[in-house]
Image (cartoon, one colour):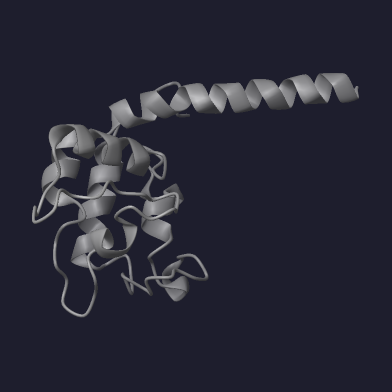
Length: 142
């Protein structure tokens, strides 16, 4: 019985790891690159300020000195990292949207960067949610 449970756990972990590339493919890279994360929001730091070269699950590549954007390769790495925090098609189950959302609005209890979004009606939250919602869940990400 224990051996079977262990085998099932390893199989689930292996499947989960295999699903990550498929999840990244389900999300629109161009929309990510042009609409998500660099926008300056009054009263808030941009995500990149804290997450560039951080050691968190949401880790962005450091931009080249003096540059306001990333190379194609760095953007792809960032996209892959961020994709791990998204459930394609389901913004309400995506850590990327829940972690910076105010707890009262359904977000996580604590975010080091504060409550970036006070509600799901925030236009910037909606932009990211639309990007997540537009992604078609693949069979591997269900």
